[in-house]
Image 1: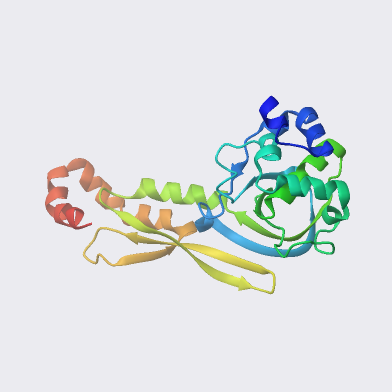
Image 2: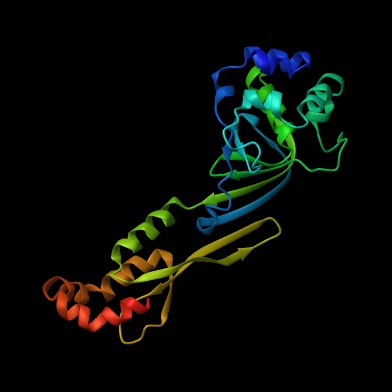
Length: 244
């Protein structure tokens, strides 16, 4: 802690550094926005909105989500000294950052199933999070929040589909089709492109919520053949398997 203290000069920052609760030693998590994108079924764009900074759990910035804690960010955040000084001299910058902004970078976050991840404005998010935990300021106005709803049901459906494939069957991954669009909202349905056995080896494009049942019914008789006559199966589909 001694070395970290030497990097923090603002009185508020030093107080937070010494007195913050155990939450401050949690690692800043990486935003899963792109890892989970195939399973996003709703996207809602909210502008000039209020958040609870306690729900900020991570960031999309690679320099800060590789093991750094919130407490360490007070010392190692690239522009943290400037932002802490701003809090001491111009707190309204944080109370309403858009109205009192001193830079042109927006303060935007991504909300994924109720958890918040900073997209831009990492230093402001850290300040807001410490204010919320240590001072009770749990309403923070920000420029925008992209709310993403990831379907856990779709994840289970995709896992179930994998278990229904016969040897050498597979899919080309998931794709989303927009089924609703407004100024602030997009809604999607998830499809999967399956490569299945049979005389016609075309790609079967199926809604994910129907795919496992479709493949299960289609492969019912083939599973029996695979179980009782593996040599016959190899003669029928071995070449196809090698091609896939």
